[in-house]
Structure formats: C-alpha cells, structure tokens
Length: 586
Image (cartoon, rainbow, N blue to C red):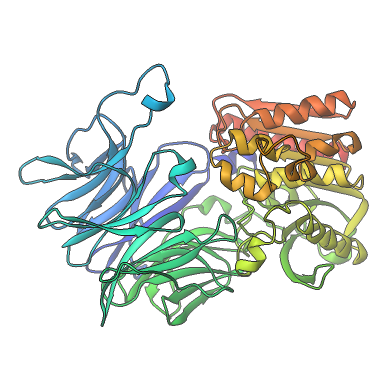
C-alpha cells in the first residue's frame, strides 16, 4: 500500500560520476523529504551490489580517488581535506590541485544593506601537498570546467552574485593554470551554465548551455578558444538538457525529445534514445552513466557502452516493487489551431478506459520550460500516481511553453501566458471527456509554481472545475517581476512591469488576480513562508481576493519552507491534505 510516508522517505539518485578506469560509478542518493544525502557506488557492469559509502553529495573522481561534499567541506572517506569557514558550493579535483567555489570566510552581516551584502563566490585552489589555498578568480564564479590535459580552466562568472542582473550578463574566461593568465572569451547568452571542453582540428573549444533569449528554452553554444566566437549549435527543433564532457572528441548532449530522452553527439546527431526521462549524464566517451526513470520504474542509475542497451546498476527504491501502480498512457492530440501536442494519462490501479468516466485531475507542469516525460510520476507534490491511487484519473499535459518540442514551441508563451497555453490544456480535457474517460461534472486542477499560476488562471476563465489547488503559484505577474528572484524573466512572461507608466499593463490582462471576481471554484492555496522564487505575497494576494468575493478556499502556509517543500512533516501534510481536498469536492 502506498502511503504518504513511503513517498516522503523514498530515495532518489542523482549526480553520477565515473571512475577514471570506467569500472565504477559513484552517485548521490537523497530522500524526497529533506535529509542528509548519501554517496553510493556500484560496478558499471552491474555485477556487484551497490554499496553505501558515506554521507555526502556531489561525488567526483580524480584518477580512482573519490571526493565529495559534506557539511559544506570537501571530503574523502577519511574525512575533510581542509577547513573553510563558508560553504563550498562546487569543486573539481585535478591531478595536482582541487579547485573549488566558495564565498570568503568572513561572516555575513547581521543587518542587510543591499550595497554591502553581495558576497561573491570566488574560484580557489587547494594544494594537497602543501595545504596552500589560493584565490584564482576574484569575480563571482558560477561554474567551472577543467581541460582534459589539466592545463586550463573554463570559468563562467557573473558581474554580481544576484540572479538579476548577474544571470543576464555572464562571461566566459580561460584561466591558464601554469601561468595564471586569464583571458576573456566574451559575454555569453543568458544564464550560461554547464561548460565542457572539447578539441577538433581547429584547436580547443568550450561548449556551454544557455538561453538564447529571455524565454524559448536552452541551447548549446560553442566557443573557439582561438577566436572567442560564440556560435549557437542547437537546431530550432532540439531541446538540450545537459552536456557531458568526454575524454576525447565532441561532448555528449542529453536532449528532451517529446515524452522521451535522446543522447546526441554535439554537431553530429543522435547516438542513443530512451523511452522515459533521463536527467543526468556522465561519460568518458565510451562508457555512459545516466539517471533514468520509466513509466512504472523510479529513477535509477544505468550504465553501459554508448549506443548499446544499458544495465540498471542501482535499486534506490525497492519499497515500491510491490505497489500496484495506475496504468500510464501516452497521449497525442491536436491543439485548436492544429499544433501537435502530447501528454500522459494515468488511470487508477487495475482500471482501464472502459471503467470510466472517472473524476479527472489535470496537473499543469511548472516552468513553464519543463515537461512531462514518460517517466515515473510520483513525488512530494501531489503527483499523478498519488492521486490515481485515490481513485482519480490524472491528465499530465505538455502545452506550449514547455520543452521537448523546439524553440518556437517554448517561446510561444512570451507575453502570452495563460492564452494558447490554457487552450492547449482545455483541448486535452475536452478530448478526455468526449472519449468517456473524464466525468465533466467531476473535474479538478492542481499545479505548483507555474502550474499553480495555470490553476489560478483556469478557475478565473471557466467554472467547469469543482476543485483546484494553487501551489506556490503566481496571481500577479507585475508583482512577481518586482519581487521574484528573476524579475526580467517574469516580465518577459507577463509582458510588462508595473513601472512602465500608469497602464493599462499587459501583465494585468494575464494575471489571475484580475479575474478573481469570476471565480466560483473552491481553491486550496499552499505556499512556503520563505519562498523567494514566488514570494508568499502571491498567495496572500489571491487569498484576500477570494475572501473578498466569498469564494470557498483554504490558505496553508508552511513555515521555514521555500519554493520546494522540504520538511518531512510538511510534505506529509501536503500529500494528505490534497487527497482530502479532492476527495471531498470531486
């Protein structure tokens, strides 16, 4: 029997790392509820049972020695390598040094003065032979990659530690380790990350993932070290997820491909394809390790030669083996304007379409640049299998604005959130009603983050829903552009900001708060008190509007929680409260 405790205490692998000889893979394991992560390792061929090594995160190898982070310090199995009085956020072991990213050791000021509180995370090195620690780059460093010969580093920096405007103006530089010389390779596209090195007949290159425009998804850019020219190498139809540096040749690119995931070689196309969702990849050029989930199998580490069937080498959630899951069906349909769309339908366990019509809960995804792949749909947020096991059918749509269908598809929501995006969802709901799967008198909708916006938008545009959940959602785009972590991105979605004169403003036409007087659907509003991505004020604003218009609703605020509800007891409350909400109203 699936319980809320089973979900909160389940474990999920991430951050695979291959040993230099290609025989072992180390990986991080986290519980869904906030807890201490662990380092596990297994043989790549799957012949040896995976073993827990230590508490820690972000494993990395140097030769065949394994390092990881624990309590903000770099560790081996023998303990920390050195002391540092601020948290180390990333590190990179090399043959002679370990480079790491961390703020200065001086304590943060108790009183926040904006101009004085910016604390750059600098690039530093530790020499295990002498114990010497040096600062290599004084700027705010967000990512770093080592060249295969250990002769240089590619460094991504922001002009300020703030996401806005720092993430809008990243720069790429080359640091020669022998001489200490640093050479600027120019400004990158927005939110550049994941740099990797590779070499061809023209010399060394650095590739990275970034957003070509404010919205529209990610692309892979290539920079010639010789010319410092930045080129977008991503076809308009491709949605890269992650880059993997290899020992020689062009890097590998993990690609969202509709409901599935593909692996490409940069510049030369697909080399592997998986039915399901993969969201982490590492390779030496011959052996591959990915984290993959399929419709009824949770995330696990899989390994094997590139282009060949992979072996599952981990078993991080054996407690799910005896659970009878709801059947997960792939959907393909047309939008009202003829655009091809996809999604998933999850039915209650043991049921088929012939047993319908069912109460139907639609779960719009977050992002909006995200997707539902045909992977395992279970998590702390009221997810498809959790609701299906309560007797509901669950619709997981992939409307415009998401990934997996190219740049134009993703960019379609710019200044238009809730328009064609909502029409895409409603078309899918209408189809499921017409096919006898969904009972039109028992429809619900629930979403988190951008999905929470869609839920709030939907109940202001139609009265067909009998229950809704708005989780960490947006009700006012102008306020989010002013108070959220990445205002320019929110302004691009909402179409305007509040300081653009007296109005009327585009964001008012696209904000659920503007249509609160039309809402009759009962709404469960849930939010983390310390959310800085979508501040609590969004939930409070929507709550006051619904109270003003006499709409049935509940406002639940989880103390100490951010955009993700991490505390175990709060996750349990959210899972149970959601089931009870929809059980009563549907």
